[in-house]
Image (cartoon, rainbow, N blue to C red; front, side, top):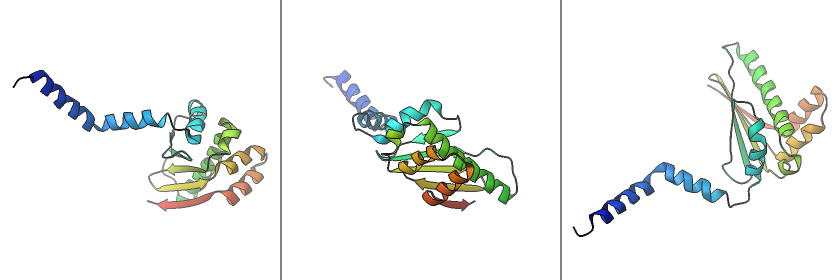
Length: 156
């Protein structure tokens, strides 16, 4: 072998390229140069969110928020009521924490409420979330959420 250091370097470089964390790093690096409404909303909301929120942007126009519902075992109707209440409060908090001018251009907002017994997946658009800022009473907020948010329950 004439150049052993070169061969070792090439082998280490190939190992580096095949590592999954390297692919994740380059994907994150490249996404910084693509204008994204979701990333701008996430940058604004990120420092203000509660500790149980996990936010991600699978695309430029979709914000997915996963919230672990940490509640003791209760009866199913009470658990369901509490999770829907927390879901509505999450939408109101998202509207309050974010910049309304940016959030209204976001096409899809999904919030996943996760509990071992029940999972609630909700979907709406950013403009509907911004409209929650104008609602003052609990009744107005609940009516607006009933009209604009699509919900799917998965009982586990």
